[in-house]
Length: 388
Ligand code: PMP
Ligand code: GLN
Image (cartoon, rainbow, N blue to C red; front, top):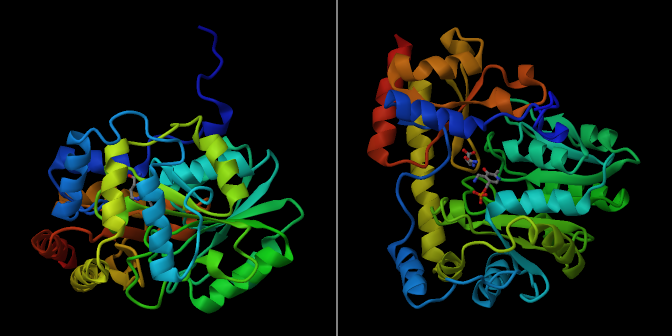
């Protein structure tokens, strides 16, 4: 074998994801896993049954159509209409993907050229950096800072150069829990129009907003034809293992993203698509109940973390709470998280890994609260050992 590195240069520096690492640590130590964001209770029984039925009825057991099954594409357009008053054509303006992760990767591969700059607020979800790198583009991070992690819109304006092609946004924001306000979304949209930028919005936590409202950027003036809006069934319906996500955008943007997507996976799992179509049609009470349950869990874990001595940045949305470990006399989040299972039997994720500038998030640690009440109570009681 030659000594040429096997891994393509664009992926060098990307090891295994922090989520895989921390979940492996939880399994190894038997600790409560508040690291990786997946619920410990599956979504609605009716939706599970719909998947079983589709499978038994032979719906989706062979390759579904490339853009996704028509039932799901229609249900996605109905959802966009019901919650946001947005109209999309199910045949040309919707694309079903293998989770939001594939939608993000396909969008970057489709829309970027080497040398293009992509502005994203850090800390960012780990697949963003890898997807931008695989497209040969350059990421330009803008740091969201504690305590409230609001975007600095002047810094955003200053960061735009002639090479800026795209803004990659995430609201509600993982890991900080920040939710962009209507004013912020409006200001960002105005900048995108002024500088003729594309915008890709990751809205996977659209239904997990406790304070404020979710405002899809694509609903703002001038944004309909320049925004790729991405969401996923994983978070909203608690089926993260199904990997059914989607894109809604103009026909020409969907066609571009579809071109990349069809050579990544071609299609994603057929029977689950029929089940997600039913999930999207659940009554409003499902969505409100899901959010209200998570609000209670946010408060339970946030109070527990505060009692244990953490500084708590209570999230406006998502099912993650970011804390600062400084009041515990700690300085290094990654080291703290590696030692936490042994110290008190809990796994968390160090926010530092979501920054290009790890110092900016050095003392921040994220806990997931999409877990059963008793699990969160037990975790809170174990964490209290830190208080001494
Ligand atoms: N974006 C964000 C902000 C996330 O937290 C996640 C994790 N689910 C994803 C994208 C990936 O979603 P999916 O599992 O549908 O690929
Ligand atoms: N989105 C989840 C989180 O932030 C994890 C997804 C993954 O493991 N890739 O924890």
